[in-house]
Amino acid sequence: MTTSTPQATTPATAEAEVEASAPSTSSDVRFKDLNLDSRLLNAITDIGFTHCTPIQAETLPFTLACEDLIGQAQTGTGKTAAFLITAIQSLLEIPVPAKDRFASEPRVLALAPTRELALQIAKDAEQLCGYTGHNVVTVVGGMNYDKQRDQLQNEIVDILVATPGRLIDFLGSQDVFLDQVDLLILDEADRMLDMGFIPDVKRIIRKCPAKEDRQTLLFSATFNQDVLNLASMWTGNAEFVEIEPEQKTAERVEQTVYLVSEDDKLTVLANYLKRPGVDKAIVFANRRDQCRDLEQNLLNQGVKVAMMSGEIAQNKRLKTLDQFKRGAIQVLVATDVAGRGIHVDGVTHVFNYNLPENAEDYVHRIGRTGRAGQHGISVSLAGEDDSFSLPVIEKYISQKLSAIVPEEDLMAPLAKPPIPRRRGGGGGGRRPSGGRPSGGRRPRQGRS
Image (cartoon, rainbow, N blue to C red; front, side, top):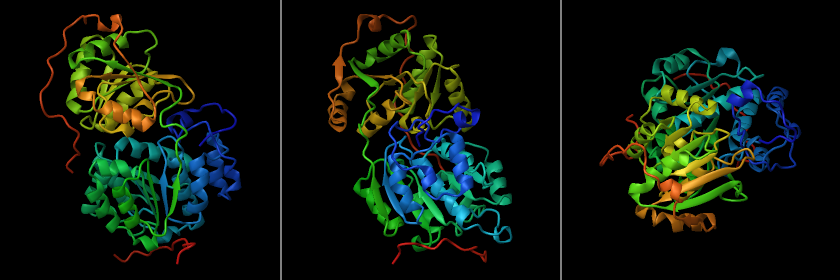
């Protein structure tokens, strides 16, 4: 969402980043013209938003009319708010009497591929539910299992935000039931496919009402044939909305590629981090073992650095992210999976220690800087192993990248020798892993 008039930032709005870094462009459609419930509109107004972003303007007329929808939009376009506004309006239009509600039976289910994204969705939902009283519960791996189970067992759940693996756990133990779900939301479907979550998602959807008896919203940054096949299985007569980014890469991000040997990458990175103006940086690497080595080597050079990857406990990741936001940590080292949850304003630099294998991940990485109208710098370290990725990325972003030899100061010997590189291992991988009244559903409009 975007705002036409800057508002004073409150702690609530700073924490619950309801697409706070969305593009500056907005549509002519105003939220107050969408016939939203006044309680929901009041929450939107409190956040300081007035006009819809293009994805919101295009999707909300369909989703508020209870149509299934397949939406293609990049991160930061406002899609999270679009599906949450739909969910909350749905709950308000057809309230179910308390006597007909049972614990462990959510009415809205939002699935996300990563813990960080799920937690962000839940924060946004809580803020938008500020005047409605709806209960938002989050179930994700790496956080207190017993607390999540207690919430499911003892609370009336209106909106459940979940990652597939943890939700499968609770379905197996019969701590949650999905037969009362009126609205199913699948966010970043392409990422779920890439991470191998589709078998889990299929099991989850089989526990939900049939697609004719629920509304389904599916969002994805890209739609290859595999994603389209899944979308056709899970939705019925769905509307398709595609919002092409004005540019695939942020216009405010200055992109540089340094041609270096693999052995010189650490030297160039560590020296660059000492340059003035590198206040808050994210370093992306393709594998967890590379992240571990980078963290240790940068610590060895006196850099205030911490690692974000799937192997780090969730409470520690949240603490690390908070320290990064506050400036107590200068550098985050992250994999792509962990990096998808990093939405922090004020990131001055993004470094690609390796070029990603997927060109879309390059766009996502450098999009962590240059946010909210600020200038950002992206630096990629391209060695021999990256030679095949560079042309693919340039073709994808329709832009020739500046590839240069590092300046003399970047090749200065390091104060301490690097720690010997780990061998083998380190890829991504995922973690191991009745008689109730329906209470009524909204009429399905436009269905045959």
